[in-house]
Image (cartoon, rainbow, N blue to C red):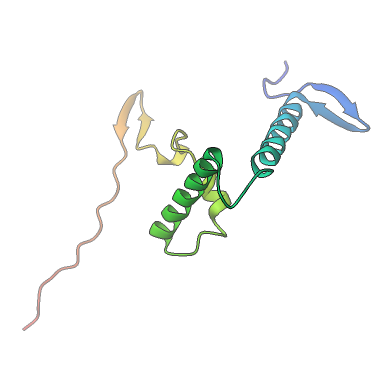
Length: 119
């Protein structure tokens, strides 16, 4: 019996097998590098419409980082800029399957501090 997770080598580069997943990764890398080269080759101080759109996106991400984290955005820009609202975090789900029915996961209530004053 073979595993459904097994990858079939399409070819070998020396002793290293190259699978379909590696080819897809290489294709994505080529698209990103060429896209970056094409986007950044004609930057100017007087921006075109396309440059204005990209600068607006970067400025929006920077403003979000400043507003939420209260730090300069430069070290976090690349990481936060990869986030897309269309993706959902697997840890962000509030529902789980328990005994064939859906049940809401409840968070423990924070302990309230008693406001009793001692005379």
